[in-house]
Length: 175
Image (cartoon, rainbow, N blue to C red; front, side, top):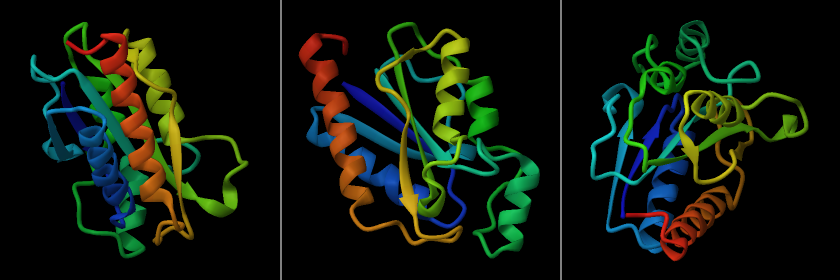
């Protein structure tokens, strides 16, 4: 089973989660896993990919927008393209019917109970576009806007991805 992990990251926290997800996918039976920043990710998923994880930071209770990305750069984020993030990628992606998707995000730990999540929004949009989900959306927590990640979040991400991959392999959902 081949997997693709697409991420958007402003302060490297979501990127760290993306790499932990990739480690979990490998442990769960994926034979090849590619991790790609969203502005470099293909909007047509290659035919040999079975599973796509997409993740980004939660900005203003949802997926980032060009204006929120620009604001993050003003707050010291990495200089990344501000016009294309997971919102735009999820809106444009094309994939074969066999491909399963899962979404994750990073959010500030202090606002765990507030509504809104980039992962929930991405999952909803993927479902509306007719894609099948391999898992419900999952959030990972940072201590503040710039991070760092709360302790154990990369381990949680790896365990989540491993469980998803093992389940797909065991049920025969993967080709």
